[in-house]
Image 1 (cartoon, rainbow, N blue to C red):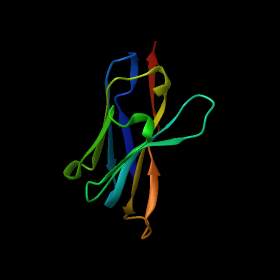
Image 2: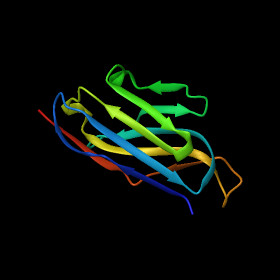
Image 3: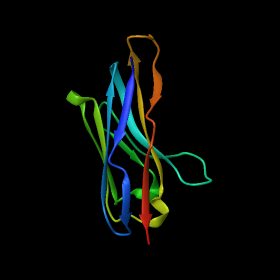
Length: 120
């Protein structure tokens, strides 16, 4: 059974920091992991992702402030968020692309989301 579980969201003042974590289980071959976010009333957007070869990709709005990292041994991805702004307020979703024991296909799995609120 595939599980993708996020943690680390919360309320923080502008300029502060938060660290999100996401642990995946039930996926034997992970190709990529990452984070998306959905601000209130807006579409879900890519924040950052990291591939099996450790290459990374960031949205322009978070470059220089957020850092994505991955622990392959633990099937865990992290998002260190510094210098947070009110516009970073959103539900953050973990994304895992991989192959599980229940399907031979490369699929994208999502976490349940974690709320990040940045007050001004």
